[in-house]
Image 1 (cartoon, rainbow, N blue to C red):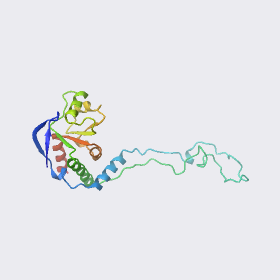
Image 2: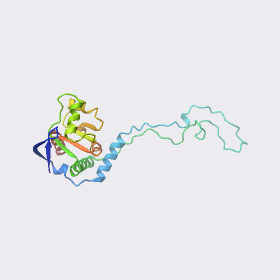
Image 3: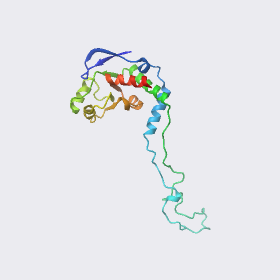
Image 4: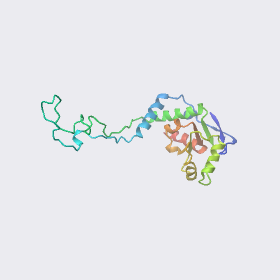
Length: 210
């Protein structure tokens, strides 16, 4: 499968890049994508929610009314969940939301997500979009050249390109990530996926080494 390689100003370079069908052209597995995205989102939860139970509430244990003759149930403490300000019965406790997903399933899911981007013509390969200086104005010009102004996009670079990261951080519709940090949620949650040539080669190399 071949895609055109563009310059960072959006012009065609006259070259094409051959994408691996084993990564960018598989039969997508929707269930693997669902499980992996679910696992990623679950891992973002801190799980630190907590409410006080009856024994943790600091309130008097003095009887609010006499034991018998009221016609109501006996209640010997203002810590009771039945009283306003009392403890909560069976409230949430801190716990992990992590969902274990096998590595092979994660790989299939990521390949499926990349395949979807190619099939929907939402994958763009750029020769190189490294910035000479950290200027938001220059990066906005790149977006304009690629016709991505206002489009939710993820730019994937092969390594830590400091100037590119600094230039894009104030653009709300764009995020930049390194190949090693690219996850399936980033791929599925954007409209356009923009890869540098080096990033494509790094992705293919990472999968071939698994």
